[in-house]
Amino acid sequence: MANLTIENEDFGSTKSGMMIIAFLVSLLLLAAVFFIGLLAILFTIALMTLKVGIEIDQEKERYRFFKSFFGYPSGKWMSLEKYKVLVVLKKNLKSQVLSPKLVSALNYKQVVFEVNLTTESHRAKIRLKRFRSADAAMKFAKKLNVDLGFPLENYNPVISDKTKQRRERRR
Image (cartoon, helix red, strand yellow):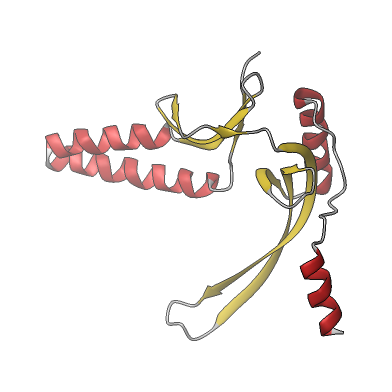
């Protein structure tokens, strides 16, 4: 059985922009200083082949966060034994953009849906992929349900006694 590879696409537009800038700079350097221009072109090609994500090996029950250059992934393998449940979480991401002179700020909020692999108690989780729509996240989670054989559940973490006591003191 082949490993399941899920690519992270959070920085796709940033990567595309960096590739365009690196390509233009490498062309300028190639015209000015040939050797440095060749090195810049090699850097641009390496940037074009960069992939980041998570790879799951079901046979050996392990996973790794990988970086791949020229198609060769690297990353440390970790045990997948305790992660047995798929959940979809709704998250509110908040950001702030400052003006060039730091005079005014623009705050904005973005809602995303994350597909996570969690433990049975839902306390520890591994983010597999982020989506902007709930339908796309659920479709992906159902596909993983079939591929990996892990159940898809509602997020309901176990609350420890210490947390329950702290919440009661606050009331």
